[in-house]
Length: 298
Image 1 (cartoon, helix red, strand yellow):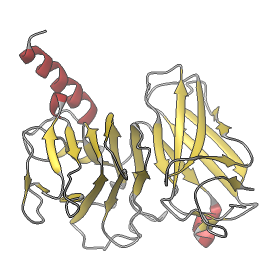
Image 2 (image 1 turned 60 degrees about the vertical axis):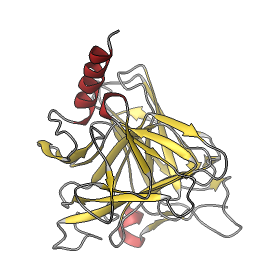
Image 3 (image 1 turned 135 degrees about the vertical axis):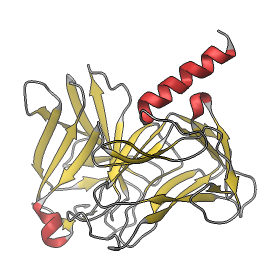
Image 4 (image 1 turned 120 degrees about the vertical axis):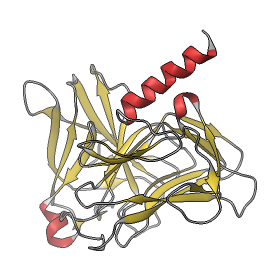
């Protein structure tokens, strides 16, 4: 296939995933009614200092197939993080990105993305970096404005990366993703954590129907799989005939396994929850993190 045609096909795929409009080398603002901004890697470069015009030069950055962002770790121990200022708005709480490829290098490996304002929740992995679609609300609270200064217009989004090259077609901030996992509980609003005996609801919302949806749970530090209420998987059930919304409400009793020290609990952002979908249009796993502490480890 000619190189020009390959590039155009790749760009078409990135456009479909990341929004209707693509602005070369810039952030596309409001590409649709559900998205505040979307950033890809077309003609993207790093630069000195903190800016909303480029990524900081703490990591190497390349343009991948179709204009994807490829963040590359460096051999310099002082260069392990990059970042960029992006617009923020409490009405657009969800950060959404897909990791499509991970190239491993020797040594300690880690990835973390975090919005840097009070009470923001980060998502990350150590040792075994995973592919899939990651979506979670950067605002910790149930109230839209909790954790974000009332006058905030932009925020520094930081990426830490060690001994890995990570390909991300785009990063975007949305009102609500097309496909994502949400976790809710009255305990979160009442006491900001989940304890044994508390009800918790896991929901997977999809753009298209699926035939089966299960959740599995991981400790983000080295990624061992956990047992939630003694089971490695939680089966969700569809709430309607279209099978686009899947849900399970259970009483949290225990979480087993992981790399925590005795007596420690899963603080916000420590767990990763994975949705595996069968028989639908979505072929990649969905991921999220725990927004509040899961204090049910025994």
